[in-house]
Length: 111
Length: 114
Image (cartoon, rainbow over all chains, first blue to last red; front, top):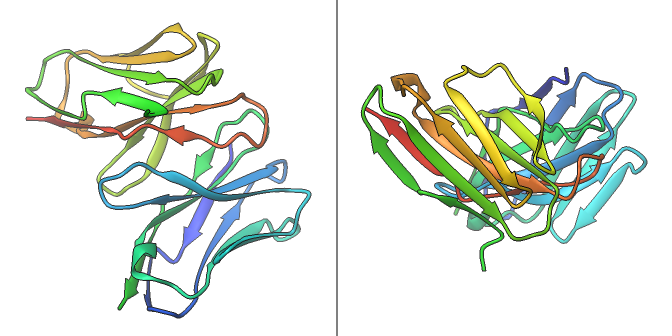
């Protein structure tokens, strides 16, 4: 089955700086890559996703890039704010909508 | 109007008891899931139903039994609870099983077995 690795496990950034989280996946058939944000004590929420026919997608301060050859994708957050502090999960799906999640990345934005 | 709702939000119970968690979605989605999130935050799929039919059944102890009376509801019954069952259980739904359908998660049920 699909194996998704996510790193680093914890990332601290100064407010206003950029944050980048990287994920790798193992199944070359995977074609859908969502990112979820989970604030403390809350549910994971979809923040952005990308399909395998697109290399980059942007939504305001967040963007996702996909490199199918290298089988990795990244989440970029620019101009970080304290409310960006959360655990971020990447995931990959290969068509049966079974999402395989990474282990999560704790992002801490330091005011 | 909550899209995916779970009850109860918190559940504290003794080892050996049997308990149920309920989930309902009003999004008109066809597919529902149960995920377990352990203390290290890892999200692990347990079950998935598509239009009341079980389509994913991961390696989960048979003490866990899901039931989907209709496509808007997915319940989870756990027999003979053990300490290791303590976790947050998330229900989720998606429009279908094809690629590209993001999940909508419920608010979670924090189960504590003492």
